[in-house]
Image 1 (cartoon, rainbow, N blue to C red):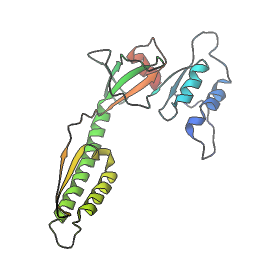
Image 2: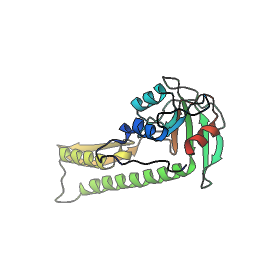
Image 3: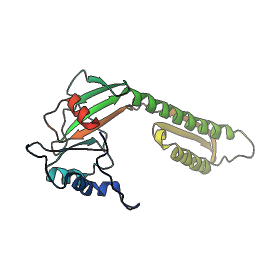
Length: 219
């Protein structure tokens, strides 16, 4: 695409409150000329609030956007997803989802191999940082002059979890104690399935296939 128009707003203006105004500036409140086809509005997740989706559909627009919610339980319409490449020749798998949204909108499953690699790398680095902090805390229990009180150790673990909250939910951390003093800090990774590189598009378009929806969103 290319820039059609631009507008400056006050710094405290939330992006999601500007949709109707921007569309009015672009269209002059006119629908597509000489056709019954609806205009399709492509949105990012930050703009695609429930109120904005309601406004679009109520004013005769179709839309496609990144879903603000990642689906957990879903069934792909195709056993083998449609594979395409992005503009940098990286593979992307696409498949419509069988289950519609509550209002009948459709979801498009998107699996980016490049995004998967990036997210896996980020999680691995975060996990290594968390485990290093826990190891340092546990090693300190055997040294003189370090805090060993059970309550204090639990507080420190809480802070470690908070600093590493992206991955800490996947860890089971246990502290053994004796007479109110921590004796050992141990941890293990829970068996949790985490899907890397996957996100979903949501759209009001009902009659388009995977590749067409992807092209519309990325035009």
